[in-house]
Length: 289
Ligand SMILES: [Mg+2]
Image (cartoon, rainbow, N blue to C red; front, side):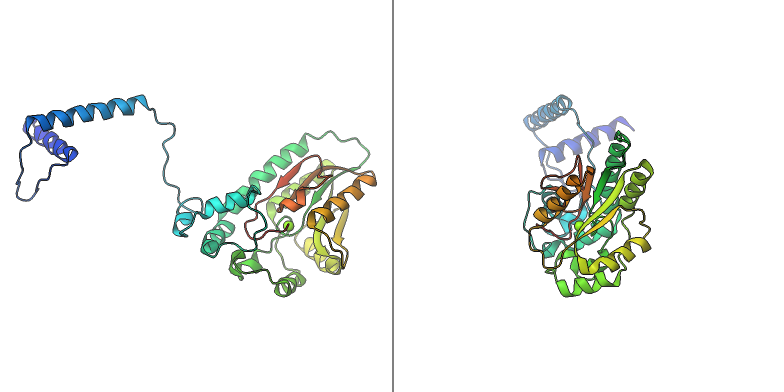
């Protein structure tokens, strides 16, 4: 670049930095005073020094997809809402915020839900591989069913991804179809445990009248070899935490050692005895206390 051009570029840059108006079409430029240019130069020098003193920690780039853009599009921070739900900071909620329907839908149907589930199961598998078995065949691992072993996403996709109030009648109709698809990451853990000699036990809030359809659904989706399928007795009234921890206590009393416990709800993994280690799968669709 010729020296004259370089000077012109520098001048325009300084004018822009100084906020001095100019018109590119007519070149109607008001020439800055020497004092103005001096001040601009000093400010630029200060900015450069400040940038050098504060090293970049990470070159952040805007995220696309459910982690970033969709949260903003929803008009509310749906990603923050989901984090609060998953960390059990937000409790006793009845529906997904209406404005987060699209966010949750994209999270569940896109790759994010699967990736989050994979991260959980990777940890569970690594933990299981390190367990020293006693050799008496008493080690068991508790699995929840809905949104843990089987997915009800086909139902929730038709009902606003959790933005509609729970409807027991229509949900039961769906369950009784026995068509819920497998959650493949959980099944990976299930099969790994069997290969290691750890017995899976299903413990579900589904009631006893759904035993046949649940068992058939599990088998049709590739599950086999479980030690037990525990369903809630008809007319049993207690919180999920009380019911499930009570069933785990019975397992322990029968001499089993619960080496692991995995579920999508906090109520699956809270309450003594929880199991030697618990794993929480993602579920932004609904809350069961
Ligand atoms: Mg569940």
